[in-house]
Image (cartoon, rainbow, N blue to C red; front, top):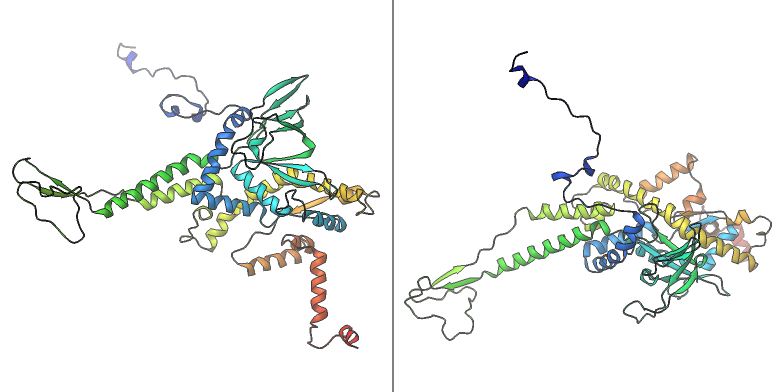
Amino acid sequence: MGILDLFRRTPAQPPQVRRFDGAAGGRRGFGIGSFGRTGTETMLAGPTLRDRARYAAANNAWIANAVGNLTGALVGSGIVPTGEADGVAAFNVWAETADADGRTDFWGLQAEIARALVVDGEAFAQIIDSEMGPHLRLIPPELVDESMTRDLGEGRFIVSGVEFNADGTRAAYHVLPARPTDVFATTGTPIRIAAENVLHVFKPLGAGQVRGVSWLAPIILPANELDQLQDALQMGAKVAAMFAGFVVNPNATGGDDPFEGESQPSLEPGTLQKLTGGWDVRFATPSQVSQVEPLLKLGLRQLAAGLGMPEYMLSGDLSDANYSSLRAGLLPFRQRVEQTQYHVFVPQMLNPIWRLVIEWAAVAGDLADFEADPRRFLKVEWLPPRPLQVDPLKDTQATVAELEAGLTSRKKAVAERGWALADLDAEIAADAFQRPANGETSQEQKGIQK
């Protein structure tokens, strides 16, 4: 081997390393933030995210539209129970007076909780016992003392106003006293409310999370930047429309000031004033950003993607949509909505309040057979309203096909429309009694007339 062969030798290969590029350092990894434990990160950032999300939902037209559509998709006119007929009837009677403040009913409370879930990231409802049964009163999340975090000894502790037992189960919530006229949360002593008397509804991002985080968190900054861009474009358009002119004296010699004695020179529409020697008029020609519309649409798509919803549900723009694209865009969105309905609303809110109401109705004597078979009355299935369809005829045909194929029942199909099967059958029977198919007077009606 000659001396030149030493330079031709292939250098030794470094050992193979497996790694995630997203976890790498250097130029590509510079500027990428990190996320610590879910419980800690959400506890620290939650209040700020909530305040900014509320501002955006109240002032940003696109986000306000998205929040309204998300709320409507989550609960619609109300998620209804289906189960033992007597139990459902007792629950529906209670639902009319469920609100402790008397402003709405149980279905309206669902809508308020759904909106709080989207904007604030969490919702609290206190269960208040009364002679008329349990009532619900919504608690603003900021009143659950977020500053209270301490160790209670013997394994018990409090995190952001939520008290835990030694086994990790929730024991109580510490709520600050407040009045509707208070501008800021009071600094008084928090009131301890047992966990069984509070419904805490939120969708966790990960294990160990104690308090909720606004669903608007991924889009707060992009929405603010898009607002600033739109404001700048509008201001640029205003400046361009003003057709401003500037009077200059290039050599600063010769000629008297043509505007001497005027407080502010002006250019009237359709006129041009003759100037004396040495003066010149130059007009402003502000430049406009090209490709403005694609840039704005890209920003709106980013906001919609951050919320997991079709872009038209945020912008309201259906100019580029058709029947197929609408249905394709709605499929993953509805999948996410159902995930929240059955994994958050049902276990955290609907099932607990159903059990309380049914047990109260049994004690009140409204359910005669409850003691014989409690499980029959406590068993319940919650059915959200059927989503509105672009083509109702095709939707109805699909429901009929499912019924004929045995893939659903009339009870479930009727409940999805917010009706009770017994009430619907009674109305159909009443219609048939009043209007016979052959148009003639029925025997029952003849008997009544006699």
